[in-house]
Image 1: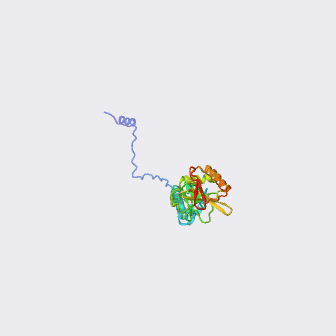
Image 2: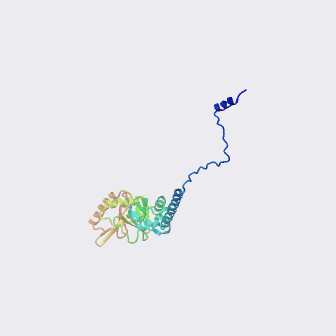
Image 3: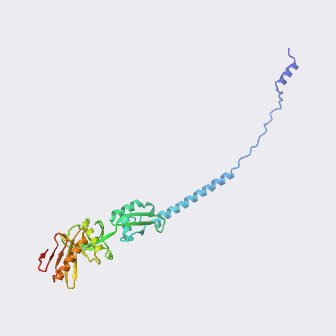
Length: 285
């Protein structure tokens, strides 16, 4: 049988120490370090102040943008226009009192092209005040000042009616044409016949000191030539054969005046049927 010594040695080999009872002793308390919250509290307050400042600044900016007149369009800057003035373009653009944030450059371009045929194209630039809207106009160039029943219109090289000029406008560089009562078309809404425009422009290039032209539905383009107290009507028709017609007219005129004949009318509208009319309304070929 194992003895007491043998049992003690076995306990020692197992590494177990005998427990000693010391009564009820409180376990030592371990004091933990409390985390400091002062730094996070200070950072949180700073972010609140910063956020509030941002809100106030944004409110002030939005107030300046929308509650003042500074960003509402009241005028434009116009470039490239010769026959249109700033007030006309501003009216046709249809952006008066519109906030600059809502101005659509493509819509402004469409408005201008649709409002007046004088505008071939337009470019619109948006920027900050004071010149918020700049419009660069590409105009159709008028070539004729057409007058009919005391109404004047500008006409381009294709016969398109561009617009009526203002009372204070004069166009000495344009061909002046006055249509008589026989001409009821284009009624100032339809294009002028292209052969009439072509003939007028050819006369301008050929005829030095071209007078105001007349237009008659039957005889075409013409003018009145004065010779002292005498004078006569000249009719040239239309089309692009004006140089030949002018030469024929001048030859016939000189021949008549050389023979002491003062015509009332010389008509070379049709080169196959050239004729003149005398004082007794008799016409001769």
